[in-house]
Length: 221
Image (cartoon, rainbow, N blue to C red):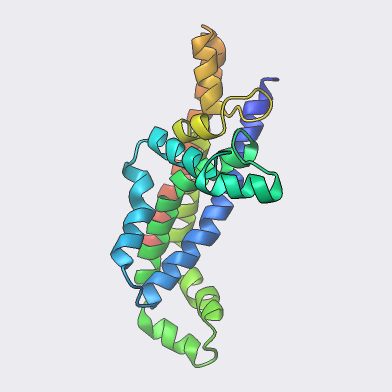
């Protein structure tokens, strides 16, 4: 494993997870604020659980669901001969789960703040929900969505517990920066650990600056 591999993999995992999270969270938030959903409180509780659950609990649940003998994992392996566990796919899945609540909350708050008059204007031209989302909700809530996307990317970048349990720590395959720090620390390679830690801090600080900037623009708009 080269020094750059955990950095590149971490960025790739965070980027892939943040795209998945953005699309899914925006879709769910739009659907949930516009429709009467049975047991809405239960669904939203499930959506927000990753914020309060320990990452190791999330990792355990992912293993039991998508592992080779898991509920979904058994089906995937028997019918398609694939298993996401201990692969880069597992790392993306773990990052997506822990980052989803941040994006969902940002999208929901942003959409709820959109004036109904804006929606009514759009509906004069189209009743297509996708068009309403595209031309009214997303533009009006853009700064909140930028903040949510940035936070979800940063959360995916720093994910360790669920990733470690579900994706493992396989050199050249699933070693991200957080797991690289853990491995270097275990081996007594403090210099290497400090370099990865510093890079993580710098990247996270840059993303937090983007969040702060987006929040300022949102309040100024």
